[in-house]
Length: 82
Image: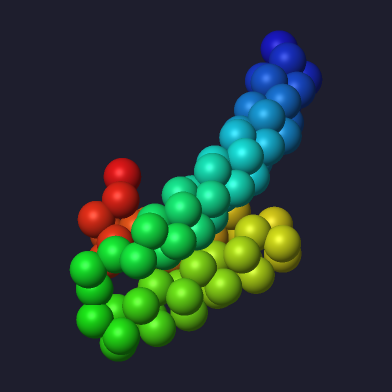
């Protein structure tokens, strides 16, 4: 029985990290699309968004998907994107 629980946990970890990875890409694309539309934000806000977006991508590439999502969502919040 313990082996079944272990296998189930491993499967959940594998599949959930893939879902986070996919979500990162979607959020990065949303940020890029919003920036391309020249949003009504200050230069300082745009600089912060670009910094957060780059930081999120770096975290994503390192496999730190939850941290990447949190960082990307900060940028999306500034842009008013959901």
